[in-house]
Image (cartoon, rainbow, N blue to C red; front, side):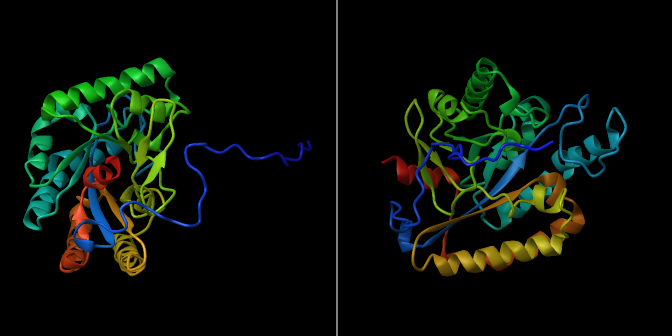
Length: 296
């Protein structure tokens, strides 16, 4: 059956305008650095009675013992060793957390936020649910509830949001601003922050990586940890070079049930040491610190 030719102007998000000429503010990061680097650790908890979540095997049984226990290894083991590593290397972590972590293992969140310079970022309630599939009222309730719980836990406002699975509705940016979030990590369309237009006011989009990210690169695309770490290193070298001319942002997105596995952890340590040995060449920071420069 033939289909009608599509020649109309395409639907676009209407959140930002296209521009090949980048004129970001500020013209450089603190201390004159051209490259801002942040390292994000995603702390996630999954429901045992659903099959949503990253999978080692797509043919697991129900209930999904295989994949659930593999992911739970991250919270029980991997994340604790990673926290020790970040602490020892003086990395200020961007801690992206489901509120379900507060119910299941709050002591893990306590540990990560005890690392100097850490920032807490909201990540929905659980990665067992895709936010963009909700009705608008339910999505608003989700965002508001996560905001309230994390604010109460932290005793100050959480400013950043990453949707579980990067799942947005057409109303998500409006709802984030409505509930007092100032920046989102959902978009990977640039290497510098972008100011989004919403009906409720501006929202800052901080670049969040979709390939320098262990889930899509290693699971399900099957890259080895050696390949992933080489990608991290090459991304760093190229963005550092580009940052001599215009400011750049590099994020590294990690999940403890993936890079917290001992054979991957060992290789990750090496590439982090390599990058951190050159920390005088860039600004090691968190997304919230970057967003704060755009809020003035």
